[in-house]
Image (cartoon, rainbow over all chains, first blue to last red; front, side, top):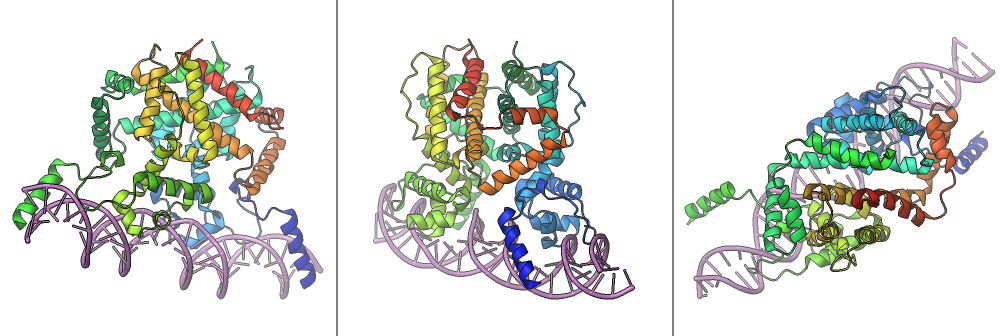
Length: 244
Length: 244
DNA sequence: CCCTTTCTAAGTACGGTGTACGTAGAAGAC
DNA sequence: GTCTTCTACGTACACCGTACTTAGAAAGGG
């Protein structure tokens, strides 16, 4: 018995690549032991509430666990690595998107709706843009959105790989816009903004960067309507993606 | 004396916004006390060497300080916050770019050269893409590059704000490509890649995401020439930026 | 039915982190 | 020469992710 168990372990170590490091490869419930006291959705919700209130840096295993009313180390039964907590958060937020089940047949409208949904989520959750720029995010809800994007481009001439790349580019664009918008609105604190202004005006008056001076000076006052700026930039990008 | 000093402090606290939180607003040398034992360039170099060798997470104030042969807390005279260390690293790497002093008059060629220079830097430094996606980076070298970008687009019809946005978009594109390339090459470890394959094949064979299956299945084998993929994607983006 | 297996829950502890604070001394300014 | 302002550095604190361990609960096989 001892020998066979040992052999079994050796075999699993050889065949299985250790343990699945990706959280979506672990079933939420194996059906054997006692019923888990928390669901992935509840864990993600707790972490999201925390991040919304105190910022992404405040999301620690300890704080999430206590917010759930659990011991710190109990959380590791659900989330073996902290990264996985971020994966849960990302996918939960993507699950908030309200998208039609089928694309409408107008790719430009569909992709614009998707982009707007993403921007809205990033406005609700300040931590979303930086986080989703860092991590790939391939959870079930992200897959659904990816499928929607690809379905909208079903009649496009791009090959599959290019479509995936364009999807990434669209996401990246929305993330960058959301961060720009937040900074422009003073989201990084008055201190940071004041410093930035002082620094850039100093650089500009130095006179060594004429083009920069012109680019920043021309639009010195922030444009009145950020949504219009978003729409224009998005339009440029969508022309690249769907043509016309 | 005590009173006046206290009054002075109160005044500085009221007039000055505390202390400049941005590192580029602090002069490297004030010229008063003893000469600093380390330069910003040396500090950045030490941090970069560390990040290249052991990854960005290994860059800690302690390790950088000991690499410089300094006490941990001495480093805080140069770099009051850890974020600033990242700023130094980013700007030092941007300083590696070899760009012509003046744009050639062919915007497409100039921007392509810039993008290629960025990609090369990201290939040299695995931590560059994730880091520069997260932080704005407005150091002196970054300003030089921004000026080059704007100079190349001097005859463009875009307004200043749009040009800045397009610059961000170009940078974002290169970062994303660099990360995609690294992941495709197995840069995140064999474990992660194996899990990703297992997960996606599972999802695909499930049959609920036909478009995703087609997009991933069509290009199942990675394209032979990543540089060609980069060139094609870059071309798409440059057409959006410079037109034609 | 019991017993074995496999799960969950939780505590303790370790090595690491950023950095506030205080002290000691060196070099320019008057 | 004295004052002011800088640099250098050690100590200390709160917090982090998580390896390891123990105790107990629920399902599966006989």
